[in-house]
Image (cartoon, rainbow, N blue to C red):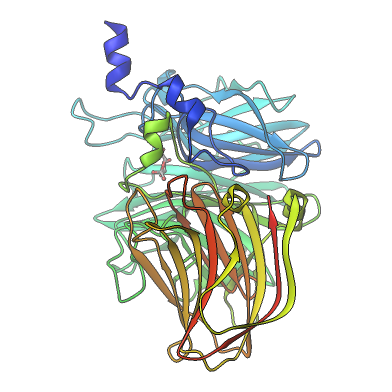
Length: 482
Ligand code: FRU
């Protein structure tokens, strides 16, 4: 009855897969099956490698493998065979998230070996493991696994998502854990990636920042140190923390001598519905690039009907602004995606609904840029994938400076709005990437970013600019089909 077993795990319907209306045009997704977190981001022998949490045999989360894509340019991705498969003693129930680092010509993956600690699968006994490759494609697990076989006393069996970096002669590793409902990040040091010395807790929740911290990342940016985490269990607070879980960061100073990290407040990195478990890496040109999982735990995923589930965001470069906040900008390589210029207008007064283009297939994969000048309109906005029955609305309210992303009429799927207040500016610069089931909005060179999945139906292709209660002055409007 193997067949029935597969069905229960969400068997892939090949017919549906071929027809998939929400399959991405240019984002990283699996050929079929489930994906979540980006893992092991690295540039190795010139190639960019992206791995991801993957269950190839069904459209729901299952025993985790590491799927693999690679690219020369961060734009055109090729699929490679699965890099890590669970089932050994140290990773019996899954190869969970982790990172990659180059050492002596090899690319090394450091990941969490997941084992359930009880028959009911309620608790975990997680350890850290190593695998390596000389060609970047075929990976061998280390005979020394697990390389960290017990969690520190400040943590628990929820002990996962190692992020490794090098400084001088040493490697450092952080992992997420928790104890007594307090999320934490713990720190280790090694000289060979195999023997690790525990150094202590790098940071932890003050009681309000979540019961578990997943997917920690730690790096220098703009003269400061950034701790990026994906906490579980922060309570919603006005427009903040509206998603089930968040990804955000602390900015601080790190002292390697005393292993002391002094840091400020927690800030969400993205204000849309679907951004989680982000990971960063530094490429050979020194850029700090981040990619996130473009979904949210426990959120409906209508694409499962097409035989797949989940995708990754566009690669984004991180910058630290003078106000101590991170900006995320799409990497410049993405301009290679531009196929045909659809609109180019240097000045435009929007005083009522204005269809930017007639309903057209080309408007399903789109990049759009424009500057919004100060104007007398109360509201200015743009509707994407609109038709008679559906629309995804991005709206800016002049008085409150609040930007809203409203997908409640976006199509199939979970709906809901997200709001974020923009800083005061005379001109707001928008850059929008639309793919077949996602929208990513970058405002003012990434000062604010909103990322959400949308599930429009095929007949709704319209794009429309609108203003209410006055006119809105738009400049440098450009758009390309991708
Ligand atoms: C984050 C996460 C990680 C874990 C992985 C399992 O989304 O829960 O903490 O390693 O997903 O797939």
